[in-house]
Length: 314
Image (tube, rainbow, N blue to C red):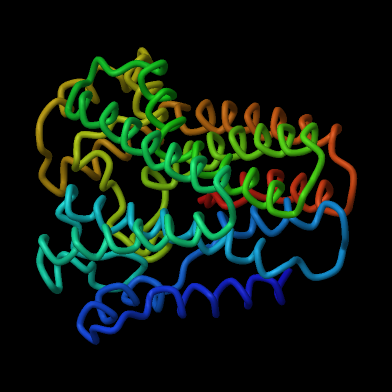
Protein backbone atom coordinates (compact mmCIF):
# COMPACT_ATOMS: atom_id res chain seq x y z
CA UNK A 1 0.00 0.00 0.00
CA UNK A 2 2.99 2.34 -0.03
CA UNK A 3 2.05 3.82 -3.38
CA UNK A 4 -1.54 4.51 -2.34
CA UNK A 5 -0.50 6.01 0.98
CA UNK A 6 1.97 8.26 -0.86
CA UNK A 7 -0.96 9.44 -2.95
CA UNK A 8 -2.94 10.10 0.21
CA UNK A 9 -0.05 12.10 1.65
CA UNK A 10 0.27 14.24 -1.47
CA UNK A 11 -3.48 14.87 -1.65
CA UNK A 12 -3.60 15.63 2.08
CA UNK A 13 -0.89 18.25 1.79
CA UNK A 14 -2.67 19.82 -1.17
CA UNK A 15 -6.00 19.88 0.66
CA UNK A 16 -4.69 21.93 3.60
CA UNK A 17 -3.15 24.69 1.49
CA UNK A 18 -5.22 27.90 1.49
CA UNK A 19 -5.04 31.33 -0.11
CA UNK A 20 -3.89 32.78 3.21
CA UNK A 21 -0.23 31.96 4.01
CA UNK A 22 -0.76 32.20 7.77
CA UNK A 23 -3.79 29.90 7.74
CA UNK A 24 -1.78 27.49 5.60
CA UNK A 25 0.97 27.55 8.21
CA UNK A 26 -1.59 26.58 10.84
CA UNK A 27 -3.30 23.87 8.81
CA UNK A 28 -0.11 22.23 7.58
CA UNK A 29 1.60 22.14 10.99
CA UNK A 30 0.49 18.68 12.09
CA UNK A 31 0.39 17.29 8.57
CA UNK A 32 4.09 18.03 8.26
CA UNK A 33 4.69 16.39 11.65
CA UNK A 34 3.60 13.06 10.19
CA UNK A 35 1.44 10.42 11.82
CA UNK A 36 0.42 6.79 11.51
CA UNK A 37 -2.20 7.53 8.82
CA UNK A 38 -3.95 4.29 9.77
CA UNK A 39 -7.39 5.74 9.15
CA UNK A 40 -6.80 6.48 5.46
CA UNK A 41 -4.98 3.14 5.29
CA UNK A 42 -8.24 1.47 6.33
CA UNK A 43 -10.09 3.31 3.57
CA UNK A 44 -7.48 2.27 1.02
CA UNK A 45 -7.53 -1.35 2.17
CA UNK A 46 -11.32 -1.49 1.97
CA UNK A 47 -11.18 0.06 -1.49
CA UNK A 48 -8.79 -2.67 -2.66
CA UNK A 49 -11.15 -5.53 -1.95
CA UNK A 50 -11.95 -5.99 -5.61
CA UNK A 51 -8.41 -5.65 -6.94
CA UNK A 52 -4.81 -5.83 -5.81
CA UNK A 53 -4.01 -2.92 -8.13
CA UNK A 54 -4.13 0.81 -7.47
CA UNK A 55 -7.31 2.26 -6.07
CA UNK A 56 -9.17 5.13 -7.71
CA UNK A 57 -8.52 8.78 -6.96
CA UNK A 58 -11.94 8.85 -5.28
CA UNK A 59 -10.88 6.21 -2.75
CA UNK A 60 -7.73 8.23 -2.03
CA UNK A 61 -9.86 11.32 -1.45
CA UNK A 62 -12.05 9.32 0.91
CA UNK A 63 -8.95 8.53 2.93
CA UNK A 64 -7.95 12.20 2.90
CA UNK A 65 -11.37 13.27 4.19
CA UNK A 66 -11.15 10.81 7.06
CA UNK A 67 -7.66 11.95 8.03
CA UNK A 68 -8.71 15.61 7.91
CA UNK A 69 -11.48 14.86 10.41
CA UNK A 70 -8.93 13.19 12.66
CA UNK A 71 -6.50 16.11 12.36
CA UNK A 72 -9.23 18.66 13.08
CA UNK A 73 -10.16 16.72 16.20
CA UNK A 74 -6.52 16.77 17.35
CA UNK A 75 -6.40 20.57 17.09
CA UNK A 76 -9.49 20.78 19.28
CA UNK A 77 -8.31 18.08 21.70
CA UNK A 78 -5.05 19.91 22.30
CA UNK A 79 -6.93 23.09 23.16
CA UNK A 80 -9.11 21.21 25.67
CA UNK A 81 -6.08 19.46 27.16
CA UNK A 82 -3.87 22.55 27.07
CA UNK A 83 -1.32 20.27 25.41
CA UNK A 84 2.15 21.62 24.72
CA UNK A 85 3.27 18.99 22.21
CA UNK A 86 1.77 16.73 19.59
CA UNK A 87 3.61 14.20 17.43
CA UNK A 88 6.91 15.35 18.83
CA UNK A 89 6.45 19.00 17.85
CA UNK A 90 4.95 22.05 19.54
CA UNK A 91 1.16 21.94 19.43
CA UNK A 92 -0.74 24.51 17.38
CA UNK A 93 -2.38 25.98 20.47
CA UNK A 94 0.95 26.27 22.29
CA UNK A 95 2.56 28.10 19.38
CA UNK A 96 -0.28 30.26 18.11
CA UNK A 97 -2.92 30.27 20.84
CA UNK A 98 -6.25 28.57 21.43
CA UNK A 99 -8.39 30.76 19.17
CA UNK A 100 -6.25 30.16 16.11
CA UNK A 101 -6.01 26.43 16.90
CA UNK A 102 -9.79 26.15 17.13
CA UNK A 103 -10.34 28.00 13.87
CA UNK A 104 -7.69 25.92 12.10
CA UNK A 105 -9.35 22.75 13.38
CA UNK A 106 -12.70 24.04 12.13
CA UNK A 107 -11.16 24.67 8.72
CA UNK A 108 -9.86 21.10 8.52
CA UNK A 109 -13.31 19.71 9.38
CA UNK A 110 -14.88 21.97 6.75
CA UNK A 111 -12.37 20.79 4.16
CA UNK A 112 -13.14 17.18 5.02
CA UNK A 113 -16.84 17.87 4.52
CA UNK A 114 -16.16 19.53 1.17
CA UNK A 115 -14.22 16.50 -0.05
CA UNK A 116 -16.88 14.11 1.25
CA UNK A 117 -19.56 16.05 -0.63
CA UNK A 118 -17.61 15.56 -3.85
CA UNK A 119 -17.83 11.78 -3.30
CA UNK A 120 -21.62 11.68 -3.10
CA UNK A 121 -24.47 12.35 -0.73
CA UNK A 122 -24.11 9.06 1.16
CA UNK A 123 -20.46 9.70 1.96
CA UNK A 124 -21.20 13.32 2.91
CA UNK A 125 -24.01 12.27 5.25
CA UNK A 126 -21.87 9.53 6.76
CA UNK A 127 -18.96 11.85 7.52
CA UNK A 128 -21.26 14.48 9.02
CA UNK A 129 -22.84 11.85 11.29
CA UNK A 130 -19.39 10.58 12.24
CA UNK A 131 -18.26 14.04 13.35
CA UNK A 132 -21.38 14.19 15.50
CA UNK A 133 -20.60 10.78 16.99
CA UNK A 134 -17.05 11.88 17.77
CA UNK A 135 -18.31 14.99 19.55
CA UNK A 136 -20.80 12.92 21.55
CA UNK A 137 -18.03 10.51 22.57
CA UNK A 138 -15.83 13.38 23.67
CA UNK A 139 -18.67 14.86 25.73
CA UNK A 140 -19.21 11.50 27.43
CA UNK A 141 -15.53 11.49 28.35
CA UNK A 142 -15.63 15.04 29.69
CA UNK A 143 -18.65 14.22 31.85
CA UNK A 144 -16.58 11.69 33.81
CA UNK A 145 -13.37 13.73 34.09
CA UNK A 146 -11.69 13.22 37.47
CA UNK A 147 -14.43 10.77 38.44
CA UNK A 148 -12.82 7.66 39.93
CA UNK A 149 -16.24 5.99 39.79
CA UNK A 150 -16.15 5.91 35.99
CA UNK A 151 -17.06 2.39 34.88
CA UNK A 152 -16.27 0.26 31.86
CA UNK A 153 -19.64 0.86 30.26
CA UNK A 154 -19.08 4.62 30.31
CA UNK A 155 -15.54 4.18 29.00
CA UNK A 156 -16.58 1.93 26.12
CA UNK A 157 -19.43 4.24 25.13
CA UNK A 158 -17.01 7.17 24.98
CA UNK A 159 -14.39 5.44 22.83
CA UNK A 160 -17.07 4.03 20.52
CA UNK A 161 -17.90 7.61 19.64
CA UNK A 162 -14.58 9.40 19.74
CA UNK A 163 -12.45 6.75 17.99
CA UNK A 164 -14.29 3.69 16.69
CA UNK A 165 -16.89 5.69 14.75
CA UNK A 166 -14.20 7.25 12.53
CA UNK A 167 -12.44 3.92 11.99
CA UNK A 168 -15.75 2.37 10.94
CA UNK A 169 -16.43 5.27 8.59
CA UNK A 170 -12.96 5.00 7.06
CA UNK A 171 -13.65 1.41 6.05
CA UNK A 172 -17.18 2.20 4.95
CA UNK A 173 -16.15 5.16 2.79
CA UNK A 174 -13.44 3.13 1.05
CA UNK A 175 -15.90 0.33 0.38
CA UNK A 176 -18.70 2.63 -0.79
CA UNK A 177 -16.54 4.65 -3.15
CA UNK A 178 -15.05 1.45 -4.60
CA UNK A 179 -18.55 0.16 -5.33
CA UNK A 180 -18.39 -2.99 -3.20
CA UNK A 181 -21.53 -5.08 -2.60
CA UNK A 182 -23.58 -4.00 0.39
CA UNK A 183 -22.81 -7.18 2.30
CA UNK A 184 -19.11 -6.39 2.11
CA UNK A 185 -19.67 -2.71 2.91
CA UNK A 186 -21.43 -3.73 6.12
CA UNK A 187 -18.78 -6.32 7.01
CA UNK A 188 -15.96 -3.85 6.51
CA UNK A 189 -17.81 -1.24 8.55
CA UNK A 190 -18.06 -3.72 11.42
CA UNK A 191 -14.36 -4.50 11.05
CA UNK A 192 -13.49 -0.83 11.36
CA UNK A 193 -15.66 -0.37 14.41
CA UNK A 194 -14.14 -3.30 16.30
CA UNK A 195 -10.63 -2.38 15.19
CA UNK A 196 -11.21 1.19 16.37
CA UNK A 197 -12.25 -0.05 19.80
CA UNK A 198 -9.11 -2.17 20.05
CA UNK A 199 -6.93 0.68 18.82
CA UNK A 200 -8.18 3.07 21.49
CA UNK A 201 -7.70 0.55 24.28
CA UNK A 202 -4.12 -0.05 23.12
CA UNK A 203 -3.55 3.71 22.87
CA UNK A 204 -4.81 4.13 26.42
CA UNK A 205 -2.53 1.35 27.62
CA UNK A 206 0.41 3.07 25.93
CA UNK A 207 -0.33 6.24 27.91
CA UNK A 208 0.29 4.18 31.04
CA UNK A 209 3.33 2.14 29.96
CA UNK A 210 5.19 4.06 27.23
CA UNK A 211 7.67 6.93 27.43
CA UNK A 212 7.32 10.50 26.19
CA UNK A 213 9.64 9.67 23.31
CA UNK A 214 7.65 6.63 22.26
CA UNK A 215 4.39 8.55 22.35
CA UNK A 216 5.52 11.86 20.87
CA UNK A 217 3.61 13.56 23.70
CA UNK A 218 3.76 13.52 27.51
CA UNK A 219 3.15 10.05 28.98
CA UNK A 220 0.46 9.85 31.63
CA UNK A 221 -1.48 12.68 30.06
CA UNK A 222 -4.81 10.90 30.56
CA UNK A 223 -4.17 10.68 34.29
CA UNK A 224 -3.15 14.33 34.35
CA UNK A 225 -6.40 15.31 32.60
CA UNK A 226 -8.54 13.12 34.84
CA UNK A 227 -9.42 10.73 32.02
CA UNK A 228 -9.51 7.32 33.68
CA UNK A 229 -9.18 4.73 30.94
CA UNK A 230 -9.67 0.98 30.93
CA UNK A 231 -6.36 -0.04 32.56
CA UNK A 232 -6.95 2.53 35.31
CA UNK A 233 -10.56 1.42 35.83
CA UNK A 234 -9.46 -2.20 36.13
CA UNK A 235 -6.55 -1.30 38.43
CA UNK A 236 -8.97 0.52 40.73
CA UNK A 237 -10.94 -2.68 41.17
CA UNK A 238 -7.82 -4.60 42.23
CA UNK A 239 -7.35 -5.53 45.85
CA UNK A 240 -3.60 -4.87 46.03
CA UNK A 241 -2.86 -1.56 44.29
CA UNK A 242 -6.44 -0.31 43.90
CA UNK A 243 -6.85 1.33 47.32
CA UNK A 244 -3.66 3.38 47.03
CA UNK A 245 -4.51 4.34 43.46
CA UNK A 246 -7.93 5.53 44.59
CA UNK A 247 -6.32 7.95 47.05
CA UNK A 248 -4.47 9.63 44.17
CA UNK A 249 -7.33 10.01 41.73
CA UNK A 250 -10.21 12.46 41.63
CA UNK A 251 -8.00 15.57 41.49
CA UNK A 252 -5.15 17.11 39.46
CA UNK A 253 -1.84 15.37 40.10
CA UNK A 254 1.72 16.57 40.42
CA UNK A 255 4.32 14.97 38.16
CA UNK A 256 5.55 12.59 40.84
CA UNK A 257 1.97 11.54 41.60
CA UNK A 258 1.33 10.80 37.94
CA UNK A 259 4.35 8.54 37.84
CA UNK A 260 3.24 6.79 41.03
CA UNK A 261 -0.24 6.25 39.59
CA UNK A 262 1.25 4.83 36.39
CA UNK A 263 3.41 2.47 38.42
CA UNK A 264 0.40 1.28 40.42
CA UNK A 265 -1.59 0.56 37.25
CA UNK A 266 1.34 -1.34 35.74
CA UNK A 267 1.84 -3.41 38.89
CA UNK A 268 -1.71 -4.68 39.30
CA UNK A 269 -2.17 -6.79 36.15
CA UNK A 270 -4.58 -4.20 34.80
CA UNK A 271 -2.51 -3.59 31.66
CA UNK A 272 -2.66 -7.21 30.56
CA UNK A 273 -6.33 -7.36 31.49
CA UNK A 274 -7.07 -4.34 29.29
CA UNK A 275 -5.03 -5.81 26.45
CA UNK A 276 -7.14 -8.95 26.80
CA UNK A 277 -10.23 -6.93 25.87
CA UNK A 278 -8.33 -5.34 22.98
CA UNK A 279 -7.51 -8.85 21.79
CA UNK A 280 -11.20 -9.74 21.95
CA UNK A 281 -12.11 -6.74 19.79
CA UNK A 282 -9.34 -7.65 17.31
CA UNK A 283 -10.64 -11.21 17.09
CA UNK A 284 -14.16 -9.92 16.50
CA UNK A 285 -12.86 -7.58 13.81
CA UNK A 286 -11.05 -10.39 12.03
CA UNK A 287 -14.13 -12.63 12.17
CA UNK A 288 -16.14 -10.08 10.18
CA UNK A 289 -13.75 -10.51 7.26
CA UNK A 290 -15.17 -13.97 6.53
CA UNK A 291 -17.82 -12.12 4.52
CA UNK A 292 -15.25 -10.22 2.45
CA UNK A 293 -13.62 -11.42 -0.77
CA UNK A 294 -10.45 -10.04 -2.30
CA UNK A 295 -6.86 -9.31 -1.25
CA UNK A 296 -7.72 -6.75 1.42
CA UNK A 297 -9.12 -9.26 3.90
CA UNK A 298 -5.73 -10.77 4.70
CA UNK A 299 -4.12 -7.32 4.98
CA UNK A 300 -6.77 -6.10 7.39
CA UNK A 301 -6.54 -9.26 9.49
CA UNK A 302 -2.75 -8.84 9.72
CA UNK A 303 -3.20 -5.20 10.73
CA UNK A 304 -5.52 -6.19 13.56
CA UNK A 305 -3.03 -8.81 14.74
CA UNK A 306 -0.10 -6.38 14.57
CA UNK A 307 -1.91 -3.76 16.66
CA UNK A 308 -1.27 -5.58 19.93
CA UNK A 309 2.44 -5.77 19.13
CA UNK A 310 2.76 -1.97 19.45
CA UNK A 311 2.77 -2.14 23.26
CA UNK A 312 6.31 -2.09 24.73
CA UNK A 313 7.15 -5.26 26.63
CA UNK A 314 9.41 -3.51 29.10
